[in-house]
Image (cartoon, rainbow, N blue to C red; front, top):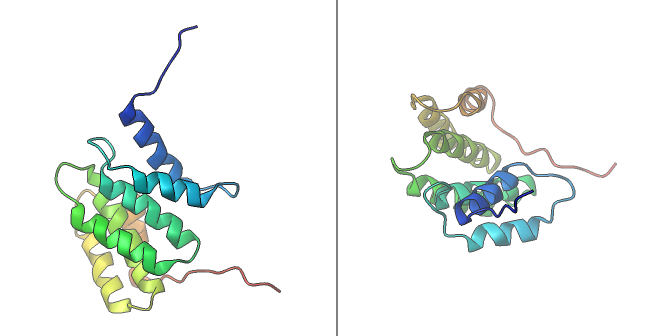
Length: 143
């Protein structure tokens, strides 16, 4: 059996992948700290790390932090990054804008997703759903 050690790019990629797939038992503070420490690289750009962190903030209802990170991620997008990232980031930004009550801007953001010829299906479906009905954050309420 040979020893295997992941390279730096693999480690950052794995961190981003893990952040996109939250589990109940996750230490969200540790995950956010790890995402914040990383500068990003050619495989996993800073914009993706910000978008992944924003999804964590959205999951816990911290909409202002989520919006800030998503807007920063959108402004950092360029042609050197994975093509799917723009659609996914914009779709999530539309949801956050909707959840914050900024319906007009959310609708414009959803339309931007639909204008991308290379957006992944999940981003297109999210944008279409957002245009049909505003996204609302469902919060657990004690009974």
